[in-house]
Length: 312
Image 1 (cartoon, rainbow, N blue to C red):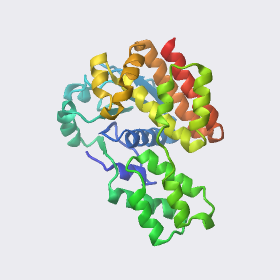
Image 2: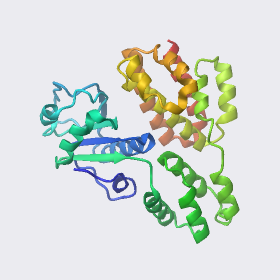
Image 3: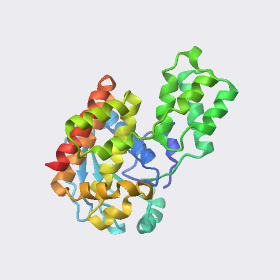
């Protein structure tokens, strides 16, 4: 059955109680946020173990008598069909599929929409109504008083990409209540976030050069979060592509200047390195969530570890 991502995002009483979760769409940062929220809910309640698997084709889930629940993150959607889904639907463990939209998944999505033990979550750029719901929830939760003028400015100017909207809301939360003025909000919303992804494109430079670029571009915890999601996006392109042809098709058109660099990086990867990349993403996300005071150090370590895996 289909569920609105906002029902998960802003509903504190949301309880994940399905066997299958299929998260798709074209808004990568919202997809990742929804996936993290579902995983965190299960871990809080069941201390669930997270396991990455390549496919559910012919998958056998061996269940121990006293084991905690497991969350299987399925990396390859291509082998998913109705038969393979039928094979796992009665299991007690959780299966999470993440796949950006494509014509190849339309049939399966139609099937899952009718399946009561599955949540189908489509994630797209936030529209005006979605931003209103998120902002109202943020204001109520944090008991913030803002003028109507500031409120509608935020609705107009907040980013349609979830992670950047969330980061700007956190910056507002960090302001002293007396500083929440129209001028300060305008300055905050025009902070230049462009260029942070460029840090990733210096991945093959010397460590000294990378550290210098990082120190110039990444100045606070919010910057680290931006960089992490940029880096995660590029890493997922590598992890999810089975060959160079598929990878090239997935590179966004606006990155035409960096395309040769990205292809060069991809050529250095094999299945072993991809698994190391998956472990690094998972480990970094946990660290950033738990140790925000160390995020600047963790962000640099994340970048240097990607380089280490890439050139090893």
